[in-house]
Each structure stands twice: as C-alpha cells, then as structure tokens.
Image 1: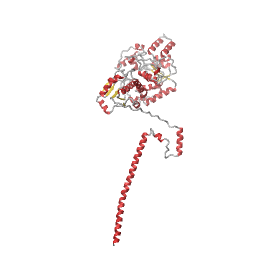
Image 2: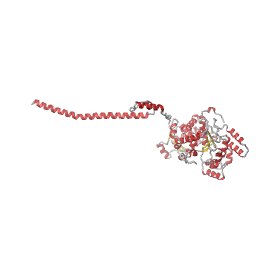
Image 3: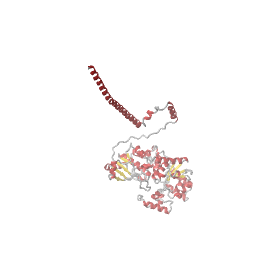
Image 4: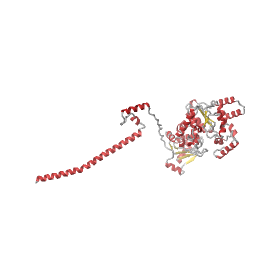
Length: 508
C-alpha cells in the first residue's frame, strides 16, 4: 500500500509540475516577443535617423561617399552600361552659391525706408540705405518702393528685384528682414516710431550724429525720402565700395525680368550690333522740364497743365527757349537724328528705343525713323503676351530697358536723368563700354546754326565729332564742386573707387 501511495503522490506531483511549466511557457514567450519587438523598433529608429542625417548632408559629402557604389539590384552588365553612358554624357555640375558668413553685431534698432522716384532713382537710394544701415549697426527692412509718383506703379520690391538674393548676399554686412518682427511691428502699428526725411547729400557723420540717436531713442526709424541722401564724395573707401557691391552684385532683377531681357538681347544680336537710345521725350519729362521745342501750342498748353497738376514739381514758370540754350532740355527726336548721323552711326544700325511713349508719336519720330529705318522697341520685338504682366508697371518695363542698355554696343542718352547716369556708371564698371555723353548745350547751338544754313553739313559733323571725342564713357575723375553737390558728377554715374582702371584715371 505504501508504494502505491508513493506512486500516486509522485504522479500528482508530476502533474502539478507539468501544469506549472505549461503556465510559465506563455509568459516567457511573451517576454521574448516583447524583446524582439523592442530590438526591431530601436533598429528602425536608428536606421531612419541615419537616413535623415545622410539626406541632410548629402549635397555636401554624400555624392563623394556614395559615388561608384553598385546598387544591390543591378547586374554587372547594368553597371558597365551605366559607366559607358556616364562617360559619354558627363553629369552636369551645378554650382551652388556659397553664402557669406553672417555678420554678428549688436543691433541698435530698425530702419524702414520708403523710396521715391522712378526705378533708377530708387535703385541708387537702396544702395545708400544699405550703406547707412551697415554703418549704424541697425537692421534694415526691405525697402518700400514708390507707388504714388507720376507712374502710379504698384510694384513691390520683390516684383522687380530678387529679394532673397538681396538679403543673403549682404548678410556679411547687414541684417535685412522682409518685415519687422511681430513685437516690433505691433509698436509701429501703434505709432511708436519716428518718421522723417534725411538731409540731402549728407556724409556718414550726419547719420552717426543725428540719425543714430533717433534710432536708439525710438527703436524704429522711418526715412520717408531717400533720393540723393548720401554725399557723392568725401566718404571712406569702404563705404563707396559697398555702394558698388550693392548696386552691381546684390540688386539683381527677378528671374522673369532677367529672362525676358536676355530674350530681347538675343533677338537684337541675331541681327547684328545695336545702339540703345535713351530718348527722354515722354510727356512727363517734357512737362517737368518745361521744354516744348517742336511742340504745337496746344501740346505746350497740355504740358503746362500737367506741370501745375503735380505739386511736388516745384518749378512752374519755365522759359523753354532759354532752358534749351543752356543745354537743360532733353534732345528732340529731330535733333537726335542729326547728331547720330553727324557722329557717323551707320544707317543700318539697329536703334533700340529705351523709353516710354514718345510725345507726339509717329509725327515726332519720323525724322529719326527716316534716317534709321531699323528703329525698334521691346513692344515690336516681343509678342503682346510676353509683356502682358508688365503692362501698367513702368518700373518693370524700365528694368527690361536697363538690361538691354547694359548689353548694347553703344549707349546714347539724350538727357542726363537717373537711368542715363546709373547705366553710364554700370557700363563703366563692366569695362568702360562705349557710352556717348552728349554735350547738349553745344549740340543745340550747332543744330540751330546748321538749320539756318550758317554751317555746312561737313562742318557740323566735324565739330560734333571733335567735341565728343573724349565723351565716350572712358575712365575719368569725378568732378567735385564743394557746397554744390547737385551740380557735381554723380557717384553712380562714375563710381571711380570701384573701377579696375582707377589708377589710370584722367580728367576729361
């Protein structure tokens, strides 16, 4: 009996052990599965982290590391074919612009600016405002363009200029923001800022002594006029060079304007050399200047009415004849035709008109088109659809003319306005490209003598050539007139501090 009991007890114990082992088995399996899941999850996270890191730095070192690694799913034949194709057609190398390092400085406040005038007056002003912001150690807000002048152009900065390039290309000099930070913007919305026009033709000490204290006091300063607010001369070399850097490197037009400008230049180049004539004979220019040579009495009355309609045009009573004899009027199309012929500009030369609508239309242009049958403008070279988005945007139209003017074989302005001066300086910077700077006072005197038969044609032509032999945009020193900066040479017309042949300058 004892052994039977023992056997029964042993069986019971064996059954109990089996039950315990069976109960413990699922728990162990669950722990094993949990460990496996944790390993897989951790591995996945690590792999994704590696992929993200490789993607982020792939443009820098990834291609060099991975170049030539065979794919795990390509055959040797595919590798050979790919190598042959690569050898036959090398991969294009895309140069990425290397951004300059940011300049770190203690910010003294924020500078807002509202530019006034046409495209090129605003262009020069933007250069000056960048310089001022840099040397006052302030943050510049992307300038606001003029929308209230005669042209009524609603274009914003980013509609004309590449705003991202403008900001990043200058980040080693000055901090530029698209708009004020939210906290500062709220202060401005509540009127907590100061607005004023700076004094014209001021040197940098004026901005340090008069403007900087205002920025520190109000934190935000708004300069509501920007034309000619920095002196032409007497400034440190680094300031003059920064003006050039902004103008020639950082102020780049939008890709749409650049591409359309290149297309116009290609069309012109296909037909040979071309001359750009900046014919400032639009209605607004004649009304502003009071010049009515060749106009009918009715046209002269219309121009006078326009002059009185714009209160910011201060000069109202103007003697057109006296102003013309002083060389202060834009040349007429008829006078311009005589000058081009006298300077031996070939009759077959393409003449590209860089201007708005010529006052008097075809009637006033007839002398020029008779002398030079290949007169063209952007409107005749392009389809209407190409210019559709530029209509009623005079600054964008002027930007196209600016690009074409830079690339022309000869540039001839008939008046020394802002575009004439800024293009003249830019062409000097590009290697002293031929720019004929017309002596209008002498020209009208000689034209009148020729028209009343006091001069023969050969005499007229010889005298004009002699007078302009040294007026072709070559290297020269800026004329400085103390206490009369408006009458001296404009910095942007002759940025001699930035020109490569500055050591060869001569007085012309």
